[in-house]
Image 1 (cartoon, rainbow, N blue to C red):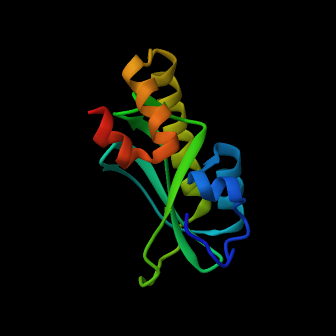
Image 2 (tube, helix red, strand yellow):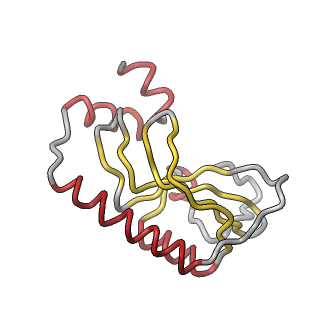
Length: 142
């Protein structure tokens, strides 16, 4: 995450560099910041639960609790994030309802992950993606 003036103080340098936080850290962020959206949706890599938070005036979208096709992995205990558009006028969601949706989705993905055996291609992709990013890794692995 690009934060040259270190304005987002709730994320440490490592979290900003890799664009992810632990599940527990994410739950803590929800407690202290406004939730502006929460929905199951898809991106280029799979279907995830996307949750946008207003953190210190910046809109940051977190996604997890889904299956990443190229990594051949269920995201369960880490949330990836990216900065969003600051131009919209947000509506704020009830945090209890958001936490219910997270808990329900967590249980579903947990059960799927228990029975999943990750492929060698998924491991290889993850190794490259963790260094160069998912977009770059997808160019070289597939």
